[in-house]
Length: 180
Image (cartoon, rainbow, N blue to C red):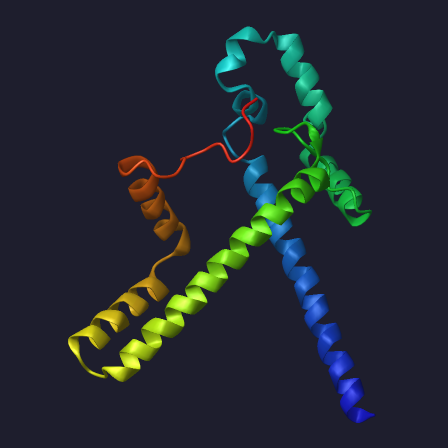
């Protein structure tokens, strides 16, 4: 009985800490975005900004709730999020959960493939490294492993995009969704 209570208390503490962390990150992100010098309507319109009248800009701002004070917008967003309403995507013009749902299967298989390949190659390189301990091959594999472990993932991604998409032209740089 004591073990069960300890486990429940541990899980409760971890859940409360997770909720506090999510709340802090969401609040901090919202504050950073709110104080950004970039106008969201201008960023949304992009090159089409010259074709849009000030009245149309006001309609867009009102539709997004940008005519409300920042605190009111934040609490409206948070209360809708708690109720399960993730909002409406301005890029795809449909509910956010619908956008996530459409891309979930593709993302899942991409993640599965990446994990499988990294597991396979990690195992093979580990066996090779263990077989030829302290050789040039082992030192090269260890150097590669330490370098990849200490390099930020987003930077590796940008380097891979540059090599395979820009220099070699093997993969597209953009457009993971249909144009328009």
